[in-house]
Amino acid sequence: MNEVAIIEKLRQLAARGARITLGIGDDCAIFRPRAGKDLLFKIDPMMEDVHFRRDQPPAIIGQRALARNLSDIAAMGGDAHFCLVSLALPRELGEKWIFAFYRGLLALATERIPAMFSTSPAASASLGTAPSTRAWLSEKPCAAAPLPASI
Image 1 (cartoon, helix red, strand yellow):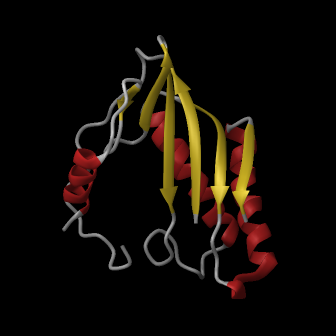
Image 2 (cartoon, rainbow, N blue to C red):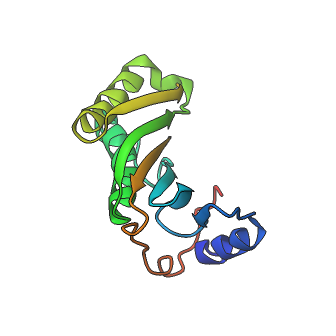
């Protein structure tokens, strides 16, 4: 089963409330708490050997983890307000790697968003807002691509 087929099956299974204007399958999910304001939710995991290689500098990996989310929020016409970070690593990478990762992520965060919260010590999630008339929807998901064996 490819990514597009999985997204379609999940879309059918997922509950959709009255204020969820867009759920599974686009750059971001959209929640409308009140008329004229949309909250854009994005989470994008980074998987080793799929999105990055271990031999890459951890600061670059950290920057890329955040950039993926910020790019999708911007693609929908939104502005990022904060990000949540959850980082799961093998022990052997150690503190030096972790702090280098966060230095890269924080360098971009300092430029682009007002706040960063760490939810645990690799994925990041971001929240953005857009006027409800400005949230841009992308076309259908990318052409079918096989999923990594780890999924």
